[in-house]
Length: 222
Length: 221
Image 1: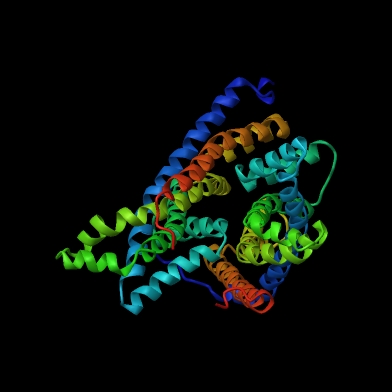
Image 2: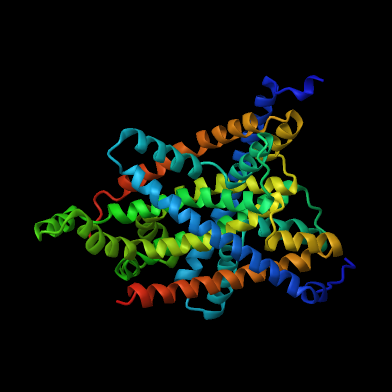
């Protein structure tokens, strides 16, 4: 068709793209940390004795999990602006990503905690442990080992979902790629190289998490 | 002046967008279901290392890259080969390939979970490979494959919102247009969220129920 590939364009601008990878990691790490906090609180809220707390946590988790991330992002970005709160695109992206991941993390944490059999907890009480001791010595270790693999997958999913915040012009790898594309019009070459960068990032994170889980928690060791 | 106000016809417009979203999801399921079915079976049944590696690359690529980027790639790559890209075809193809890779993993997990004994029993009854698959393996494997498939379906409905970026007119794009026109993002995006919720939540509940139903009577390991 007369189209000549110019792969030197993305390779020449590789530092620019790699800076985008760094920005993606910044956004993702921030969102993961905040999301974990939100998620743990929401998970505890879903199992709370108070009916109102349970309703609030439950509706937050169900609403976020059953609506698209893009709509949530549009909501945060446009609605807050219409109320006068002017967030930068990157901040709105981090907030949106954190709120979105908080709901999914809450389900993972809830599943991890609920998977512990009542008998185990009763056994720890019958050994004379207080509630705090039971939480710290029995529940946490078991729950963390159950949660670590799905949480690792969720974290990788968060890194990949961070590409969506480029839609509201938050600065990360996909936004970097689209800026490059608007400068050079080499859309195919740039996006293929960007996709490969994401692929390498995701695979590296996956291997890293597997190693961490093995070393720290001895998961998958048997 | 009246276009600047949010009217009832806008809600009808959004509902039509929701119908288009559901149509797109159906097309993606058909394409992705077929791809995933055959890729999953081939990956779990063939002994040819080359075929397995090639398919593994396909699956891993579409699972380790963002869907948005996959949509961009299909949208920008097809014109190079001369295929004229209407947004609907790029959207359908990219969602189909994405669905195919995830479904292939689900199919692979389902088929691998079936004991070798079942295959041998079919062989002992002089069944061909496809007969064994159809009469012996699949009835058992489908039980394992259905709950994650429903879960993926819910995710697909949400992920279909990303095709609005390449301009395909579905619910998200329409809601963005209406929001920009009426300058009432709170109202518009809340309604959009509610529409998506009405579509996704029943599916999610159904998936949870199917998981419980399908695990009844299964021999515990």
